[in-house]
Image 1 (cartoon, rainbow, N blue to C red):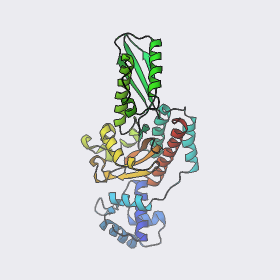
Image 2: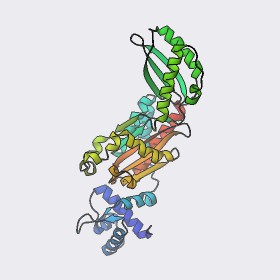
Image 3: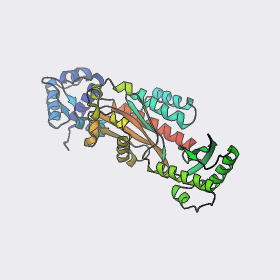
Image 4: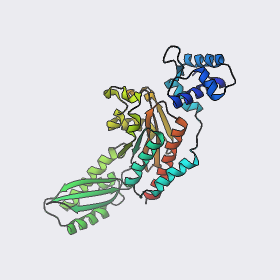
Length: 344
């Protein structure tokens, strides 16, 4: 890794800030005029040339100023971004939006996506909290049509699964309520492997429901993340980095193909502690579709029990300090809500 002098670090940081602000290549004179630097234009130009040779800046056009490269942004985020605290007014506004919302994941998750998108002017990504150990909590059986019955399965942590069951005979709601009570007593707070080890009950209706529960728990157990919530597509569709891509290689494929998003999350932020923030710049040489974009992600929830992911996807030219702080703060709020409301 190239060692940057203190002056080179300052100039790289100013180039990133100025390019983020103007979306234009940054010239040495503009840095001196905008930031009142007490050094000559020639000195700034020489340092920018050195940064270009080291791979941190590039010159998009002859005689134009410089813009940061992926490596420049990466160095800036890793070494130069200060832990920016959101202004108290911004924190209060975000907190007020959450505390005014009705309690429940169905309200918090889309709100988190909306807040992140509005604050960052980028695409927000929020996944519902997902149990690391899938555990039965409660079951309801609801009569529908003929012998068909709606099974509503609630897991510890708040996840809900639904499935239509076909019984051999028509069941009254009273019979189904009694059956649900019997199954709840058998399965309460049991994990998948514990339910699988239960012996056959000899009651065909109970065994039918137990088989369906095992199927749903097994499917849930295989999921990497919970339900996905997105917002803010309108903020980035006009960005050249999104408009100029072949659709087959667009960054938006990450949002359209769930397997790609799950792969990215499982190989990055799921390896971090709750509250840790990861910044992926230009796909980090792994995700070709993310060239010229940045993704900022954090995990929220309760360690070793229940966690989700939230963050943003946008162009590399973004205000990293503010955006990282926003992602971290919303993650902290969501962790608090999960701890207060979803764990008995």
